Every structure is written in C-alpha cells, then in structure tokens.
Image 1 (cartoon, chains in turn brown, orange):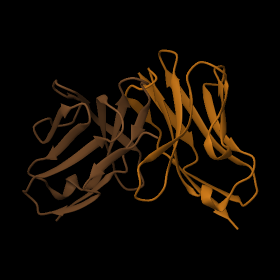
Image 2 (image 1 turned 120 degrees about the vertical axis):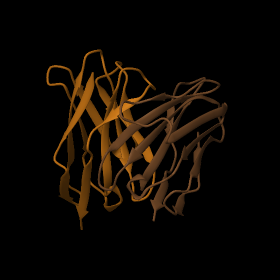
Image 3 (image 1 turned 90 degrees about the horizontal axis):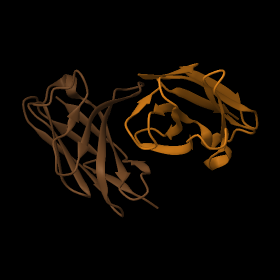
Length: 115
Length: 113
C-alpha cells in the first residue's frame, strides 16, 4: 500500500534554532503535499499546500518566512521551522497526493518540542 | 467555504455496542467527505470517504457512513464496538477528492470492557 514517511518522528530543539522536517512518499509520486499542524487534543489545521517545482501556497495567518516549505522532487517535501519558539511546539503532519490515483495519504507525524 | 461540526467531543460505549459518531458539514459545492482515525502519537488513517457515488459508504474495520444531503450529515457507525476502536476520529470535508481538507474538532471514542 501507499506509504508516507516523516523524519524525524520526534525532535526537541532550543528556542531560536531551526528544524527541518521531511515528508516522503515511499512508493508513489506526489505532485502535491499538504502540511498540517495539530495542537494537543485539537484538530488538524492546514498550514500550506506544497507543489512540486513551485512555491507553496500558505493558508491565511501562516507566516511563510517562518515555515519554509520546499518540494524539490516528486517524493519529498520539507518543512523548516525557522527561529523556533516554544509556541511552535506542536504535532506536524504531512499528507501526499498520488499523482496518478489522486488518493491522499497521511504521514505518521512529527512531534516538535521547542525548549 | 467549507466547515465540519462533530457533535460530541467524547463518546463512550461498551464493547459490543453500537458506535455512532456524528458529523455535519457545510459546503458551497458538492462535498467530498472523509472519516479518519488517529491513534495516539500517530498520523491519520482513512476509514472511508464519500465521493458522490453511493450514499452509504463502507469502510475498513467494519465502519460505514451514510451521506444525507437533506440533513447535511455524514455520521459514522459501527454495529459492534471493539476495544481496538478506541481512538480519535476526525470528519473532514473537501471540495475535491484529494484537495485540501477542512477537519472537524474530532471525537474521542472510548470503549469500555
């Protein structure tokens, strides 16, 4: 079946540093990937839509300079949280859309803790 | 614009009992509707989806949902709950089959032995 991986699954960083999270589609190509953020006991909030070879589309209220998204290939999108602060601590989940079937698959998530 | 309302943030049932998780949607276009399950510290797994074909949709793990346009609802049911069904369930709406989705606030299902 279609698998989406995220790396790392869990990361702790100090305030002011940057963290990169990878989202990979392991057995299919994805022209589009979505990045979501989930606070504890809350729902998923779409942050941005990542399109291979072009700039990401950010949702209203999401700082594009803080959350840098790169979709350099058909199987990899990265989210970099720049100058992280404790309020950026959250669970980040990506999903990838199969370019052929258009089915969407979610990654297992990355828990970011900023101290 | 789209939105989803999940009625009941917590639902508790006994093992073997009927599971009913409620979802109402709002959409300016014919909606695509999804139910996902999330176990602690994990991503989302698709249970089932409605894509304008049959109104009664059968999914994995014995779950099914019925699309009722007149009630703008897409409630999730399972005839007999298992302990392994205890998890967080999210209803989502999208304007396309695999576009960006708007999620409900989630319902935590607890299954009592």
